[in-house]
Length: 450
Ligand code: FIX
Ligand code: ZN
Image (cartoon, rainbow, N blue to C red):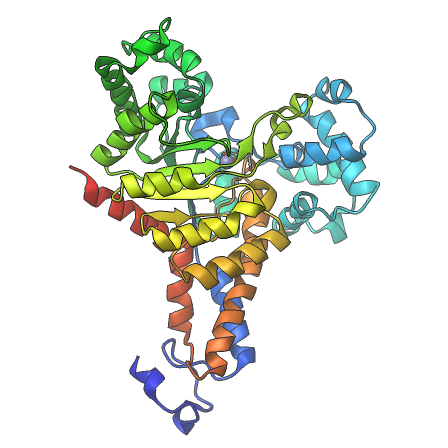
């Protein structure tokens, strides 16, 4: 700090190699330092659909998987030749061929999702200048790789310290890994308990709970909300959080959810089961709000849509439970500013990431700029939502370069007003964005425990 109080024009600072805590002298040097620090700081990716290699076929990786990612299948159906039925009748390799031809060969891959594949290939050492536009040439590069080795290579290349998975106890294949296998043995992959089915499809969740040994009624919805049943739901949540070592409990919700609504299933489950278990175990609740599922079922996983959300749900949860840490992302662009303003009202509300259709260059830039202007360094600018391992590279590369631009603009203004910035300042604030805020949310939640 003292260094900052010194006169900037002080000749002491001229022509000496800079110590990390000395002010950066010129805007050009400032820009270079921000670019370097943001690009090299390791990140915790707080929401993905990736799995550790323990989960075998659940971990998606390789160039064919990059091409059949649902963001790209949606784009294929706009421009490719096949009908839905013809496309889905193919196996993944043939689907990948079709996507490659339609989106990468017949036209330039300029969309965010398509250009992301090119970034990943290039950064993996498969320069298109050498490998050209022949998909088989890229495929060959994956042939002798193992999943475990690729995990190491990708996490290193993307400078991702750890990723949080999405762990759904209602998914039979995943459940088997936790119940019958050794679970997750790679500490770089951390767990989050996903409970959409419990909150949004109680009748089928009840059947599954019962088959897992929890004493809940499956035929009479009104009986579900008796205290002994809710105690069983809490036991289920507790058991699974501890089995998987969940960092948080999470759900995605449509935008029109109202809360609280007396007698309503979702309100009761939140108030009587989810929030009490979060508090008891000292875990945050993560909500991803504003998705309208299966607007076009023919697109399968790509068939979901965004919708405007009524954020009073959050306002009321924050008010009712000031000690509940809420990690929140919303899907509609129209809700973003409101979410940032709401976070100014409630310290237990932490916005995170630019989710899904907002994970594009222009949206990330816009959102990161105004979130920084409204919230400083007290939010989490990005998560990747990756479903395919190698996407960590392009999604984080693209995001880092946009975050660099926003941070540089903010620091440059301070610099011009003679509030000089040092490398230590840049590093500290970048670390805050890339994991610090998340860790603080986790430790505030832990304090509530018990
Ligand atoms: O609900 C979610 O976690 C969404 O991120 C996914 O359902 C969605 O399919 C996705 O992959 C978005 O990036
Ligand atoms: Zn997701």
